[in-house]
Image (cartoon, rainbow, N blue to C red; front, side, top):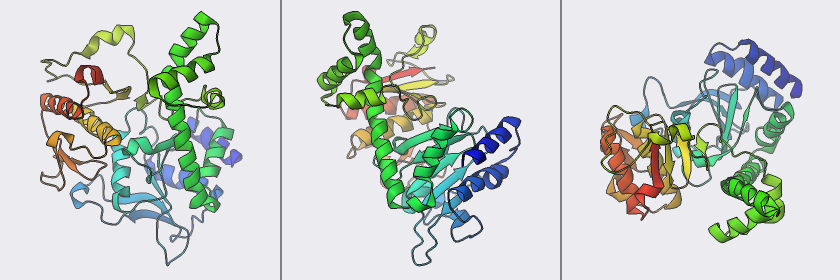
Length: 359
């Protein structure tokens, strides 16, 4: 596997993969073959797999309800998909990839795979569809084919993608990694404060972090786990979710005050929702993120009455949330902002403290 990864990395650096088809055939299929899958058997490695009951309203010229690659254990009596792999051209996942996450979410809404993967050849993101919460919260690991070590990449591929591990071991691995990411996120929120107090008091930063977490969050994380995960970065920390990071002083003025703010002709850059920052490119995406965060924390939420159980809007005017309900997204920027505040307030969040936007 390491020799293959080294050759793929070399070709990526030379720019040999010029389109999505080349990524699918010459890169992804090559890795699948090394992971034990029979790429020449269409019953096992199925390209352009049509998912069951894909919402017709979401089918467009750009999205046909077909997953680029679906993997099956070759058993004709059970066609439950083991893996969905959605493939993009090289570089497509740099920056905001939430649109493609939504695409994977729709593929998994009725026809759920054990593991789902989103990749552009360089960035690889692994999701556990059976986990709770919004789909971005089901991201349990990722790697960069160019930046990360071959050992690290090889280990993830062996544990998560090897055919011999499906489906039980692969899902168990995803669950374990997802729990590790939960711990890493909790630790990451207090690292700065713990290190500062450690320098001031001379006490162990790990012990200080343990006390802060226990006192502020009521969680008793073993000291050994805090040490183990201290230097591990959160999954997606460099792209979508910026956990615990405040804006630089130069950009602090661009955070808008919520009262009477008019977002017309302005573009959001990042949004702080309750306790973390997210990259965002539109007011529509900001509203969707707020709804998904509330759903994750309050599964029974009514979303201030703005979500519908059935589709009542025109195609392109609505969005299907992770709880199976629809919201209208064909709205002016000011309306998206107002609704986001009302959704937060409906679950008793202080809007000024729980919603900040950098434009």
